[in-house]
Length: 559
Image 1 (cartoon, rainbow, N blue to C red):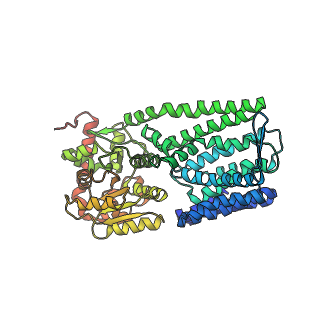
Image 2: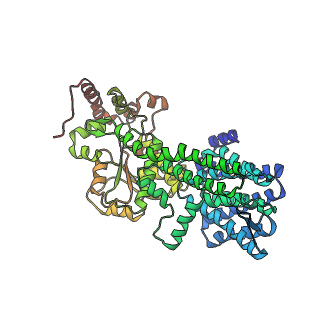
Image 3: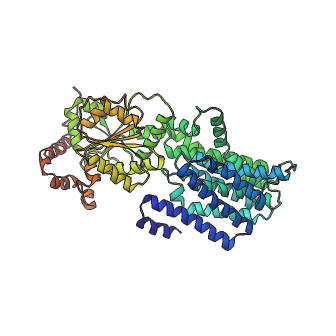
């Protein structure tokens, strides 16, 4: 399965690749069920595929009929497939349902899980992490049971194997599952949880574990229905605002839900050994996951801050591209949560020439000291930092950051505005990215030649619902423009990109990979734009200043 996915990745663009992987997953599950499954498991996978089609319809047209259809799937299952006929409790008591009550209970059960996963899917990778925990818990519960629950074992084991094989799809920190696959997985989870009951077996642990596992999301969703001001991803936003990054927040919530599920599993077993296993695994989760995540949040934040190289009074973020994207995700979630934010969040991509400009321009220097992120773009700057003994772990170029952030915006539905360059370059760049990432919402695009102080432009940008603003007007003009209008642009993230639009649009070619690795991108650009030779003469000055700093003969002093 993994080999086929790699072949597809080389042949298709991102959206086609994701779509084909989802079809491949469902097709593989159908074939495995036909080959190894029972009539009940075949029925369950069949209605899960049907639920995926409903989810696709819901994603395209968003009608209420689509949402209610999940309840209809439950009714069909109650009549022709696994149904909730009774529930057995830990004290040995039973609750038996009448035929009508069984149909309604089963309908509601199948109705809840697809919608619950769709709510959780607002947070990238959350669905994948919780599904992994859910199938692991259910497989452990089935294995510890004294009853023969072959169907439940088959569905739990297959679900876990599928998640492992497709983890780069569902565990990707910046990728959503989307409505169709949330519906598919939700139906699988709901059906697997009641397969034992449907066969007339009293196995309530498998029924109650998903309820415990998804308790936190269910509580949040219930509060959301009562209070429209409540965020449906309340706990996630709280963790983000407390200093956790995106991936750590997802893992902490998943671990917390797993802990609750473990507690429910232990409570449901009269068997001392089984309950002990659940308790032992729960303790392991606490010791190896929750405690390290909680205590590492502040340390990680302070460590990254402490490792920030400071060159001539300007702190430069020592982070990877993935972590930069995580910071963007957290910042947008913070903005959307309504936290006080009266200034635009600026991300600056700087190189050696930008450092030289900052030394001469005090205003620009101050702006670079008050950014959300300051990323090392140029190879010359990376070399200088390494020579001074304060290397950055990765060079994050403006072009690579633009591509990655556009992909992230596509997955999350964030409108993107392109501002800068000359003529229709920004429009062409926007079209190129929209072609590369189908579904990318283009809020607008225009050139960078206008009155610096005209407030109509930033107001129009925000009126269009922009979340990501790419500004390519050259340094330091782009950063100064963002700073000047930051009160108007307070609900978006602005990224200064210099001349990136020229390359993305195709006006200029990007240097070959070997030239990038050798730090010769500046030379390749000079060949295409010979008029830049005067600007390039400042590069030896940067190198000379770095050497003077190395030997203690130069120190930046703010005037």
